[in-house]
Image (cartoon, rainbow, N blue to C red):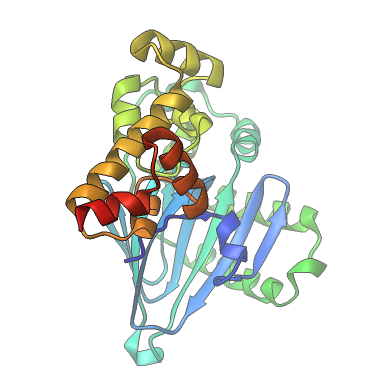
Length: 291
């Protein structure tokens, strides 16, 4: 598995992926089709993700939890989390694996929740992540989207938004648990700050991401973090990652590049620069000292 974490959806349209995408304000729809027996990787979700599997098998790992999706199944995942994935193609059809990924911004989810106008009592009980089977109606709807990817630039953004609303209405009318998850996406419960940052500091998260995961506004998160650690969160995050990087360079045979990505940095040059600024020497020298 690659050590570098791919930020999605943004990274999916860049080399080496270059996947076709439909885009409207508030949402992105990406089609992924590959012809390999098994492929693994790590993704950081910049937006909420509805993953729909059309061919093959996908295994999603989030912490200690594991979810297996087969043909015509789907799962809804909240933003600002890191997941590992393993996709395997269908050997009967040339090892083909195919999925459709619907990335939803907060504003789009809130607007949809306002449209369906459900009472607040529906938010009282938290719903876990669940793999759901698609109905024939939903399967037909997904198939109707496939021709759009042939010429994505020629598809009106308003049409994409209408199609996405149609999909969400179809989902919520057939699966109440999935509806419950949708309602919870922008209703994050307030969590202990120390638990949130300790569990996520090695992921490529921003301070805004950590604030969201803790159920706080950015200003409230910064204030509560400072009162807990007596240091700004950006400085704590950088120092904690650098200390972990030094530990890995000193006690493992991992390359500088792998250490960079596994400790949450997104650029080797930036990692080397801040490492040298903090420790007085570049990470490559730390590795030579070990040798």
